[in-house]
Length: 273
Image 1 (cartoon, rainbow, N blue to C red):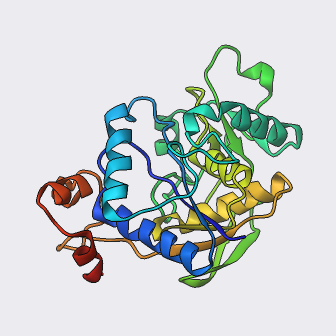
Image 2 (cartoon, rainbow, N blue to C red):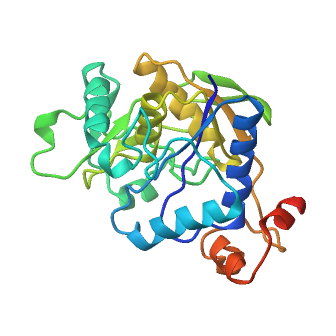
């Protein structure tokens, strides 16, 4: 059975760009006569707030979303709040460590910014890591804080067929480097948490924004290292404002909460797409 998901993060109010991508996910699930899962990605302790979780649920329902599994309705693959999934994440990290796929890294953000061969990757989220700590021994770390990085196979092309954009190809070590899977503040990074959750919830297709195309290459490597089958992927074009700037949660005038307070009709909004 087709199993899709929408995975908002309660760090602010959802905006119309989120709704458009999530609506694509819901439509694809319906077209496949499948199920839609709501996952609450609340790992950011500093920014995730209970009021944003409540608003997320209310605004999604108002807009017309219907999910069959989630934090509020339960389901066979609970928990659906990431903050409750730490045992799954720790076991995933342990499996990667046992397989020799990850290593400890003590580099600071300043170290990365000053690295000679650390240009920004295409998605601008994570600079290409120069491999400084690849051969670092555990005894050399001492009391220093460290994160865990995944060691990418330099020079290997990671290819996949995207449901919207077609064939994709990214070269490890050139388009993206060794990436963080567990942060130094003891929080699983997005790449690990996403893969662990999608695998545990048996998601068959991931629908998300085009800004995560490079992340898909990273996650395919994680699936392979963990001996798991990767889902299919469908990346949506990003929504922008009138000046062409990508929408973000700071665009409060385009938040679902604001549109709802203005008496806007969700069906009319969708017709504009």
